[in-house]
Length: 165
Image 1: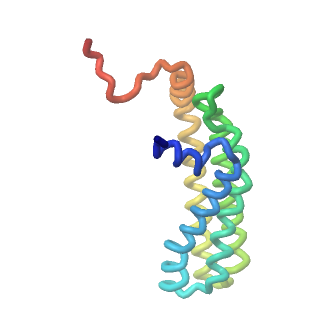
Image 2: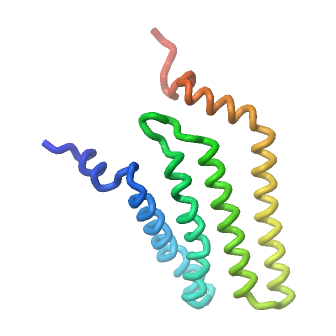
């Protein structure tokens, strides 16, 4: 008898980079169809080609940083992966996707006073978010390192386990 979990594991395999790329492309296509078209095209009236380019400007950096995330994944020899490489890949993805989105906004939005004000609001809110993330990383650096070492050593017990005998 074939177990259903075995069938699912044969369809999506965590050890195949192609499956990672396919899932990212599927996710962005789903995001485009479910979120971008109804909101930006139908409701706000933005042309569909501009909506597609804006979505692609965020999808391309994720595809670019995907091999770095893939190399930091959990394996049998590294059950908790490479946390530093994961963090670097996510920060790089966020930075590059926001830069490509800013480039797209700068080249495609009209050049009026209101549009320039909106650009500044978007730019400074994203930069503020990055500054907050950097501040949290510096402040909680020791706690994050202890947590990572504790997870790798197996000293942190799973939730739900009781200390009863």
